[in-house]
Amino acid sequence: MKKRTYKLTTKIMEKEKHISLFNICFKNSDYFSLTINYDDKDDIKICKLRECIKEMQQWLLYDFKTHHWHCFYVTLEKPLNIFVFKSNKNTQQIILKYFPDIFLDSLHSGDICFFYRNEIILGTVSHEHICNLYPTTQKMLEEFLEWGNWQEIEFLFEESVKLQLE
Image (cartoon, rainbow, N blue to C red; front, side):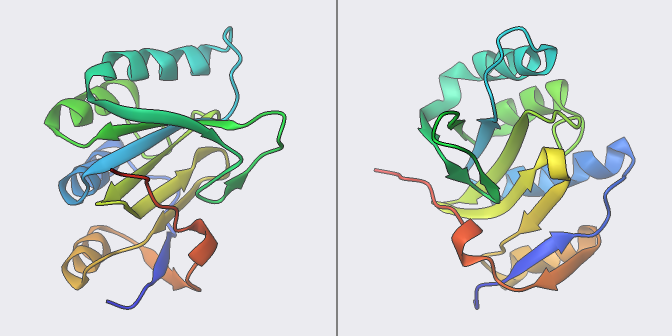
Protein backbone atom coordinates (compact mmCIF):
# COMPACT_ATOMS: atom_id res chain seq x y z
CA MET A 1 0.00 0.00 0.00
CA LYS A 2 1.24 3.49 -0.86
CA LYS A 3 2.44 5.44 2.21
CA ARG A 4 -0.24 7.89 3.31
CA THR A 5 -0.91 10.23 6.23
CA TYR A 6 -4.32 11.27 7.52
CA LYS A 7 -5.04 13.80 10.24
CA LEU A 8 -7.95 13.56 12.62
CA THR A 9 -10.31 16.46 11.94
CA THR A 10 -12.57 15.95 14.96
CA LYS A 11 -10.93 17.34 18.09
CA ILE A 12 -13.74 17.06 20.64
CA MET A 13 -15.51 13.73 21.05
CA GLU A 14 -17.61 12.00 23.64
CA LYS A 15 -15.88 9.40 25.80
CA GLU A 16 -17.39 6.42 23.91
CA LYS A 17 -15.92 7.69 20.64
CA HIS A 18 -12.44 7.86 22.17
CA ILE A 19 -12.83 4.37 23.62
CA SER A 20 -13.80 2.99 20.22
CA LEU A 21 -10.72 4.69 18.71
CA PHE A 22 -8.53 3.05 21.38
CA ASN A 23 -10.19 -0.29 20.53
CA ILE A 24 -9.24 0.08 16.86
CA CYS A 25 -5.70 1.17 17.73
CA PHE A 26 -5.07 -1.75 20.09
CA LYS A 27 -6.66 -4.22 17.67
CA ASN A 28 -4.36 -3.11 14.84
CA SER A 29 -1.14 -2.66 16.82
CA ASP A 30 1.58 -4.85 18.26
CA TYR A 31 3.16 -2.10 20.36
CA PHE A 32 2.55 1.41 21.61
CA SER A 33 4.69 4.14 23.10
CA LEU A 34 4.05 6.65 25.84
CA THR A 35 6.07 9.84 25.84
CA ILE A 36 6.89 12.03 28.80
CA ASN A 37 7.64 15.45 27.37
CA TYR A 38 9.33 16.75 30.49
CA ASP A 39 10.08 15.28 33.86
CA ASP A 40 8.82 17.47 36.69
CA LYS A 41 8.39 14.97 39.51
CA ASP A 42 5.89 17.23 41.31
CA ASP A 43 3.62 17.81 38.31
CA ILE A 44 0.33 16.00 38.92
CA LYS A 45 -0.01 15.11 35.23
CA ILE A 46 3.48 13.57 35.16
CA CYS A 47 2.66 11.65 38.35
CA LYS A 48 -0.46 10.21 36.69
CA LEU A 49 1.52 9.16 33.63
CA ARG A 50 4.26 7.63 35.80
CA GLU A 51 1.62 5.65 37.76
CA CYS A 52 0.27 4.29 34.49
CA ILE A 53 3.76 3.33 33.28
CA LYS A 54 4.51 1.62 36.60
CA GLU A 55 1.29 -0.41 36.42
CA MET A 56 2.24 -1.62 32.92
CA GLN A 57 5.86 -2.41 33.88
CA GLN A 58 5.57 -6.13 33.06
CA TRP A 59 4.73 -5.29 29.42
CA LEU A 60 7.47 -2.67 29.02
CA LEU A 61 9.79 -3.70 26.18
CA TYR A 62 12.28 -0.86 26.53
CA ASP A 63 12.61 2.86 27.11
CA PHE A 64 14.92 5.50 25.67
CA LYS A 65 15.50 9.23 25.32
CA THR A 66 15.34 11.15 22.06
CA HIS A 67 15.03 14.69 20.71
CA HIS A 68 12.39 13.83 18.11
CA TRP A 69 9.36 11.59 18.26
CA HIS A 70 6.24 11.78 16.10
CA CYS A 71 5.72 15.49 15.24
CA PHE A 72 7.51 16.67 18.38
CA TYR A 73 11.01 18.11 18.60
CA VAL A 74 12.77 19.23 21.78
CA THR A 75 16.10 20.77 22.75
CA LEU A 76 19.19 18.72 23.56
CA GLU A 77 18.90 19.75 27.22
CA LYS A 78 15.43 18.25 27.70
CA PRO A 79 15.05 14.99 25.75
CA LEU A 80 11.76 13.15 25.44
CA ASN A 81 11.38 9.99 27.54
CA ILE A 82 9.85 7.21 25.40
CA PHE A 83 8.43 4.00 26.91
CA VAL A 84 7.52 1.16 24.51
CA PHE A 85 4.94 -1.44 25.58
CA LYS A 86 3.32 -4.55 24.13
CA SER A 87 -0.26 -3.92 22.95
CA ASN A 88 -2.68 -6.33 24.59
CA LYS A 89 -5.98 -6.39 26.49
CA ASN A 90 -4.21 -5.77 29.81
CA THR A 91 -2.35 -2.68 28.66
CA GLN A 92 -5.48 -1.41 26.90
CA GLN A 93 -7.49 -1.63 30.14
CA ILE A 94 -4.77 0.19 32.06
CA ILE A 95 -4.58 2.98 29.46
CA LEU A 96 -8.38 3.37 29.58
CA LYS A 97 -8.27 3.44 33.38
CA TYR A 98 -5.88 6.40 33.40
CA PHE A 99 -6.70 8.19 30.16
CA PRO A 100 -10.24 8.19 28.75
CA ASP A 101 -9.24 9.97 25.53
CA ILE A 102 -6.69 9.64 22.75
CA PHE A 103 -5.02 12.88 23.84
CA LEU A 104 -4.25 11.30 27.22
CA ASP A 105 -6.96 13.30 28.95
CA SER A 106 -5.39 16.45 27.49
CA LEU A 107 -2.32 15.52 29.49
CA HIS A 108 -0.14 18.19 27.97
CA SER A 109 2.97 16.39 29.12
CA GLY A 110 2.47 13.04 27.38
CA ASP A 111 1.65 11.44 24.03
CA ILE A 112 0.69 7.99 22.76
CA CYS A 113 1.67 6.31 19.47
CA PHE A 114 0.66 2.88 18.14
CA PHE A 115 2.79 0.57 15.97
CA TYR A 116 2.19 -2.42 13.72
CA ARG A 117 5.42 -4.38 13.74
CA ASN A 118 7.90 -1.53 13.95
CA GLU A 119 5.95 1.04 11.88
CA ILE A 120 3.80 3.78 13.36
CA ILE A 121 0.11 3.51 12.53
CA LEU A 122 -1.22 6.31 14.74
CA GLY A 123 0.58 9.08 16.58
CA THR A 124 -0.52 11.93 18.81
CA VAL A 125 0.89 15.17 20.15
CA SER A 126 -1.50 15.89 23.01
CA HIS A 127 -0.64 19.51 23.73
CA GLU A 128 -1.35 20.42 20.09
CA HIS A 129 -4.30 18.00 19.68
CA ILE A 130 -2.53 16.33 16.76
CA CYS A 131 -3.60 12.81 15.85
CA ASN A 132 -2.18 11.37 12.62
CA LEU A 133 -2.93 8.03 11.00
CA TYR A 134 -0.36 6.06 8.94
CA PRO A 135 -2.28 2.97 7.74
CA THR A 136 -0.24 -0.02 6.60
CA THR A 137 -3.08 -1.85 4.83
CA GLN A 138 -6.22 -0.91 2.95
CA LYS A 139 -8.30 -2.84 5.49
CA MET A 140 -6.79 -0.84 8.35
CA LEU A 141 -7.44 2.42 6.51
CA GLU A 142 -11.07 1.46 5.90
CA GLU A 143 -11.57 0.62 9.57
CA PHE A 144 -10.25 3.99 10.72
CA LEU A 145 -12.17 5.88 8.00
CA GLU A 146 -15.37 4.13 9.05
CA TRP A 147 -14.70 5.21 12.65
CA GLY A 148 -14.45 8.93 12.06
CA ASN A 149 -13.33 12.04 10.27
CA TRP A 150 -9.86 11.87 8.72
CA GLN A 151 -8.39 14.13 6.07
CA GLU A 152 -5.58 12.91 3.83
CA ILE A 153 -2.54 15.17 4.00
CA GLU A 154 0.93 15.09 2.47
CA PHE A 155 2.82 12.01 3.66
CA LEU A 156 4.95 12.97 6.65
CA PHE A 157 8.00 10.79 6.06
CA GLU A 158 10.08 12.33 8.84
CA GLU A 159 7.22 11.79 11.30
CA SER A 160 6.61 8.14 10.47
CA VAL A 161 8.89 7.04 13.31
CA LYS A 162 9.88 3.39 13.68
CA LEU A 163 10.61 1.19 16.66
CA GLN A 164 13.96 -0.52 17.06
CA LEU A 165 13.04 -4.18 17.50
CA GLU A 166 15.42 -7.14 17.77
